[in-house]
Image 1 (cartoon, rainbow, N blue to C red):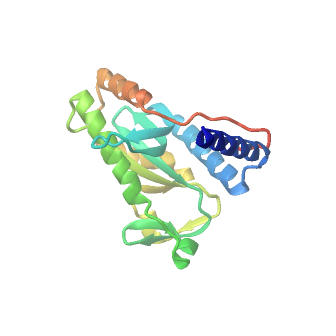
Image 2 (image 1 turned 135 degrees about the horizontal axis):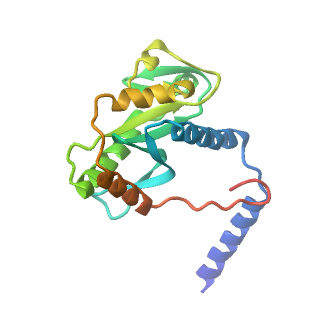
Length: 208
């Protein structure tokens, strides 16, 4: 009984703190960037459906999921977008992409391997449910910050793009692919809709 009272008290204190706190400017800009990327993807003529904040389940585990910022269903395949609102110098590190100041400080974390893992899980789900072993699911890292400066190596990466080149990148990824049957597109969409996402509650202080 005492433990339950303590847990409820801790929950109450955390909730009050969340209501009164303000969302950090960096977080606000990051979420705004995700919304901006989603709207740009929606405007592509071959894009049929766009989803945000979808949690992709690991087929090999009862628990465990990785969130994808934006999932794009096109006439030819599916693209999982990871939005990075990094400013200034963006560099390539062992086949991955990172913000230079994080690399210099030893704080950079894997980006491409993480989204590739989520893509692998999603691909397994969709290929199984559509019975299409050749269904294409692509990762795409979008560098969203207006002041980012990617290196030449980064700009040559097939799965990395800047905001103003999203449409060209979508074209590049699906080039040469045949259109998916309407039935399969419906199956893909319905499957993605069954995956979990995060409910959003906005507090008075602006946090959510």
